Length: 65
Figure 1: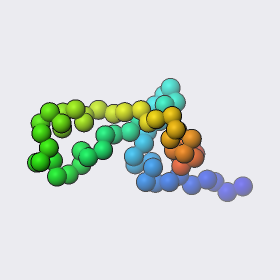
Figure 2: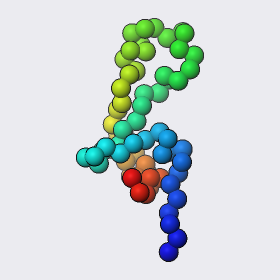
Figure 3: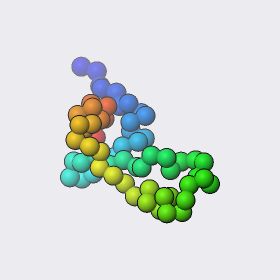
Figure 4: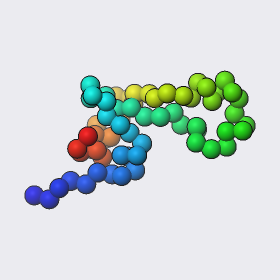
């Protein structure tokens, strides 16, 4: 049986924690940050856990995570 391939785009966006939950970064924190307020940029720090509706789909994209 051939190996399953990981979706590389998903591998760059999601990480699986040791407990099994999947974390992601906030959106709109990559570029064009000059128009955003300091408060807004500060609140976009850190990671989030993906919502439970998306877990099944993300796990399918990351078969070995």
